[in-house]
Each structure stands twice: as structure tokens, then as C-alpha cells.
Image (cartoon, rainbow, N blue to C red):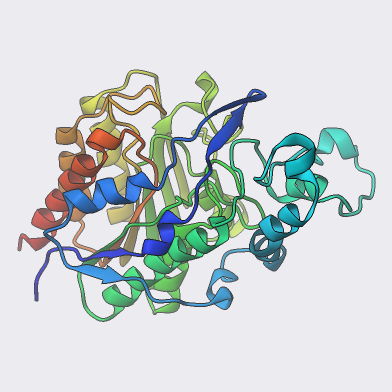
Length: 357
């Protein structure tokens, strides 16, 4: 059997077009664009391509609240039926008010009647807009991850899910950070459902995966480990991702965060990758999900980290050396000229390390 990871993808993942993001009140050009899919495909084209199979909404409920799924599935049609485009020229669903504890002050609340109010119940930032193809693309991204699990269940040592939009910021009942459904968490849960006793999620994205951490926060059967630019230095998601966060209740000790200072390069970044790999190995995990964000790269506009293609290759060797059944799920990475090469560098090295006996 070939040990080269197949690439699971779907043309439906191109349907999401955020067009712009609203950052500190200003509309800025979107970076999580459909061209990311083609940039990656062009670099991994020598691998077997597998088109994602549909898994249905029930599979999504394994990690997400049905209310979030219902909102995302219907939000844009409802927005388009309203007067938002005519009144303000906005044809994307954009939150208007957020019912934070500071606002509600412990009082009983009701769901907002206005859609622009309801959007703030589920969406937790102004950067993550819902457009005409967002739901379809998000579901396709989840199907990529779940199809990759199916391949691993069938005996493939590892499979790569070209999931777009990314997912690790999506919480059980919320979306944000350019993420709508948590593809990595869905893959981890599917591996558990397939009979793996303890699954690890290693998050290499430049930003902390607050959604994945939240989903597994109180569970001992899924480890979550992340290295990311330090939120205490002012980086998304700002309020979580700190070293003292190690899990709650039965999940105490099953979360590990390794925040990094701005400007971190290969050596220090790889030292933390090594720490997380050793942690997973010592914990006796029998399956692995890799949240492969490549936005820690020096050229990437979305983080201040300085990792090179060689660094990603070294990370692939370290993680592949665990020789666990693995699903690699695409997260961030926004510099189109280098994106595909960075992904390929990781995948090639992961394959080579996993094949060594």
C-alpha cells in the first residue's frame, strides 16, 4: 500500500466568497479566499485526489450545537430576503450586537428578533461574514475531513483534507476567525467513533484554535496541543490560548498551549513542536489529527512568526515520526505564492517519516 497521503478535496469549497472582512470598523480585502484551494492543489497534484463524500448534518452535530447549524444553513437566504443590501449595501450576514456578559449582566435574555442581532449570538467577531455559498463550502470542508477519516479507517496510514474555509476557531455553538464548522474536531470525533481510544489534535496554525480547545476542554479522550503567536501580545483570539489553560473537569491535563513571541523562527518553533509530539507520544494516543495552518510562515500576512518551508518539513518529520493513523486538516495560510509549497513540504516530510521502519 502506498504511504503517500491522498488529498481529499471538493470543488464546493470554492463557493465561499467572503469578499471583505470588517476589522476595527473598516472593510478590508478578504484573505481567506477561494484561490487558496487552487494554490494548494497545484502543489500537491502528484498525489491521489479523492473527492469528498457527503456525510449529512447529523455528522456535524457530533461537535456542534444544532442551533448553530440551523443558523448557518439559513442565514444568508434570510439576510437576502431582508432590506440590508438596499439600506446599507451589505449582502453578507454581519453581526451588529453581541450579547456578552457585560451587556446582559446576569439578566435573563431572549433570542433577538432581528437577523442582524441574531448573528451576534452565533458569530463572535465582525471578520467572519456569511455569504451566498458559505454554508455549502463549510459543509464541503467538513466532508473533506470526514472523508479523510474514512480513508484512514479503510487502512490508509494518513490522509490530507484540503478543508476550506478553515475550522479551528469554530466553537460548539459559535463561528468566527474565518471558521464556521470545526473540521479538525469533526475528524477527531470521527476517529473516536471509529474505535480509537485516545486521539490527539496537534494544532500548528499560527493562531490558537480556541474552538477545538472548547470542544474538547472537559474530555480526557481527545488531547489538544497548540503552538501559536502569544495572544497576550495582542493576537487573535486574544482571550484564550495561554499556558495555564490545561483543560477542565475530566479533561484536566488534556490541553497544552505553547504561546510564542512575535518573530519566532524555525528553531524555537520546532522546539515547541517537539514538546507537543513528545507529549502525545507519552500520553499513549492511538490516532492523530493535525491542524495544518501554514500562516506561521515568514511571508504570511496574518501573523508575525517567521517559520520557513524547511521548518514545516522538519515539523512533518517530527509529527510523522509518531507513526499514528493520521488525518491532516488544512487550517490557515494566506500568502498565495508560497501556500502550496509550504503544505507540500509538510506532507512530503510527514510521509517520509511515517514510512521509516
